[in-house]
Figure 1 (cartoon, rainbow, N blue to C red):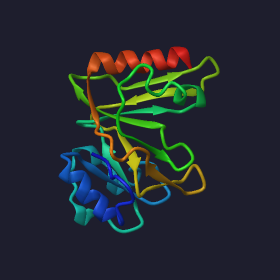
Figure 2: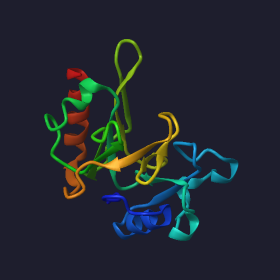
Figure 3: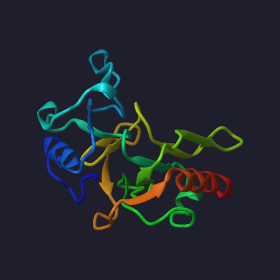
Figure 4: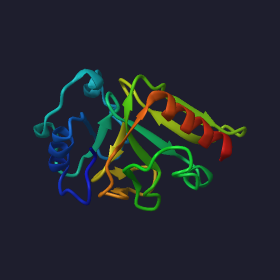
Length: 174
């Protein structure tokens, strides 16, 4: 699924992600997603481990796996309340912010915000969406490394309806 403990280099992480049947995405160091002119159309490309260099960031394309990104403390406090236990990742300071799920059916892409406009929780799923994974570093947080929280946990499979309901309940209760 996503790299367990530190996997070494970005090319090693890409090999692991591919071996799990997922699609790795090369991301330039200092960025959270593909954004260069040469990255145009990234979501339609098939990347190999040879496309990754040590030190660059790496994402997982959400073509066949979802990430629930809990962006606030209140949403992170609700882990396990509305969705099944699953593998998680995030920045070292927030290692349980991204929960990973295999999805049965078509889940929507959701960005649920509070009344102030601040993001509460995001459901990333579908063509053209991606999330950084280890050994990437977050440019918005002093180059803080991404880690896998519970590397021995399998990635849960949920229905699209259960996933959307859990994300909406998290936002409503956060």
